[in-house]
Image (tube, rainbow, N blue to C red; front, side, top):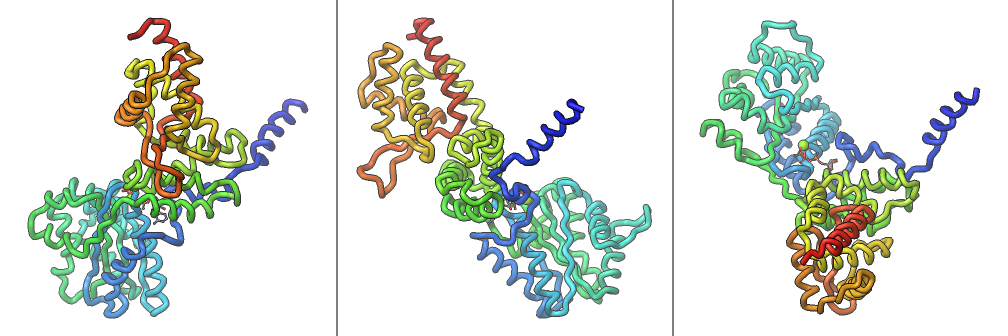
Length: 418
Ligand SMILES: Nc1ncnc2c1ncn2[C@@H]1O[C@H](COP(=O)(O)OP(=O)(O)OP(=O)(O)O)[C@@H](O)[C@H]1O
Ligand SMILES: [Mg+2]
């Protein structure tokens, strides 16, 4: 039947459509990578804190606290460490199980201990157990199996906020009340910052602030390495150029334009790949990165508003149009040089019948566009002949922006704007 064959064709064409991705799934947030470039020192620190589990198993309950801002690899570090450590312990004949609890979902003591039990496969009566009884049941079962558990308590800030001092104290000091128990439960706590520690009483806070591992935002160079590694896993060979990875790293690195958030960097990479696929481009371009960046960056919408709201003067708009056009002419270069922009600006002025402003004035416009967050401007580094200013634009896809800017210019000219 013709109808049938049409649906068949649609489905077939989508399934067999070529993609830049080899494994897009490996860029998803819950994918656990084998390697963690630039977190080697922190892994080593964790290994030192937990070493006692293989040298003197059961002697003490071990613990570490990982602290760091959003997207810097806290969860991944804890998981990668816990699973690999468990494997190393296993080789030495010590059974270590990993329990992974997100306290955003499990905010009470009861929720945490029952989640421990269920992840360890320990059946509990449907109701009536107190957290302490659940804890004892978990401990007894581990004792029976002669096993240990490394319990990751992710987003522990939420637990502190909801459950307070006594619950925190119970979790980390409960063994004090069982002097004869072997210490079989160990913790990796994860928090965004230490502000929540002030919410618990001093004694408990003192216990919490032990073995702290602080993660900082990734630099441009570090994110470049991370992106290269993850791109190799996720993309078909030859579909993502170095310039694309470098540009994403610059947009997200803490010493670039971002906060050092690896999740955001990977998200931009994945979305850029989606745009490439949607267009059937076969290759990820700088413009795909701009589109992706605009999508994840909340400022992007504001910039289009700035342009339509009339926050820019006529000549700033003409200059912006020049920047957009120079950038559009470059396939693999995210930045335009000042000289090229000025030349294009004069052409744009001619097109719209305006007298171009002088160099100093143009420079002022550039500064102002940068302050307003419309463009990125930075001095060219070494390796370029002569120093110049490099101008980039990451807040929006150029096509959409160009249309808006041209509309705004025409509106201003029609309305006889100052
Ligand atoms: N060093 C690294 N090497 C490879 N991938 C990394 C690295 N650090 C982080 N990632 C990746 O970046 C993303 C964010 O990492 P993760 O979720 O661990 O951050 P987080 O600090 O827990 O963030 P949040 O504060 O939002 O919970 C994940 O996809 C992770 O795989
Ligand atoms: Mg996390």
